[in-house]
Length: 397
Image (cartoon, rainbow, N blue to C red; front, side, top):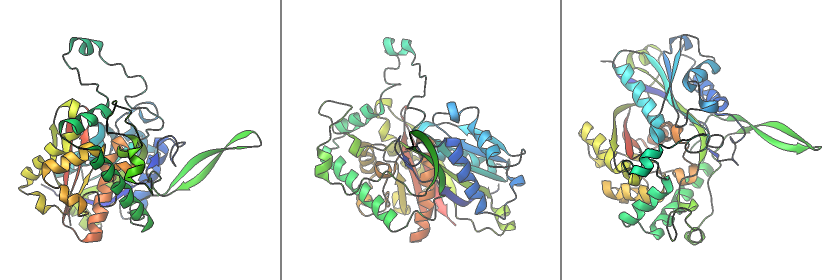
């Protein structure tokens, strides 16, 4: 069995929903640019030897439809021999793509694969453009929570597991502080591919499109305080604690990894960065979907015969502060958050959650952070709408 190694991991900046740097740019356009940026960093790789492009996408329709994986491969200039596919496990689609690529290479079915995720939330709404829930399930009670609003699940977690509003707001402030400091110190520059994005302005009464370089995440809200966040009301529940200030931002973005056999990397004189050693998914109640990491992280650690003490850095997606806090508590690592080992450079509350891209985005952030601190192992984990969790375990090489 061949080992599957990651030789590069990159991402676009995260652009705020409707108002950010990618809001006026199609997802296929910036996805292609990230792919081209990845290839430019690896001139040793012959594009003709890339077998497949696996793209995670939560809402593969409209500009993300017609098999986005194949379209991005052709748009990025990869040869016709390179196939493409789109995978969807909702919020974990990006890390699922990396796991699928890793498994395929280990099985000996491919030698080189690009895997990651791409999503526009500015152009395609949650649930898709024409969502049609099954009315029978809704009224007969057989699957009453299958279509539950994500914000309501966050309120359920807070209520059922005693996560206070004060804890959520404190967590959100810390996420923004860390992200702001990471940006100011230039930590993300190595992993980000600048995007030629579009913006519009009115000139002489006409709407003019301009091209601008978008090169840094634009969703961070700093300075902010617990007092500031305490003034916000929950849009999900009367008197609830989950607000726009302590929930993830809807975001646009793309991220990709180049994965190949260890033998191929050696032949190309490429130094591997890391490898995904294990990957796990786990189911949970749909009405408490945010607790997914509390199931997936122990599952992946058990697979590997490890404990949380063997993991140097965790990137746990902050879909909502309530679920991120609970997941850390349940796994027994809440103290590691405040020690800076979990989401050390901020999380989705500050940097955004571009759904199908998120798992690949967090992978890029994790691997570059492990490299900076000389760490050995890291975990990327997230909750998943519908009641699931996913966790990918990485080992630096």
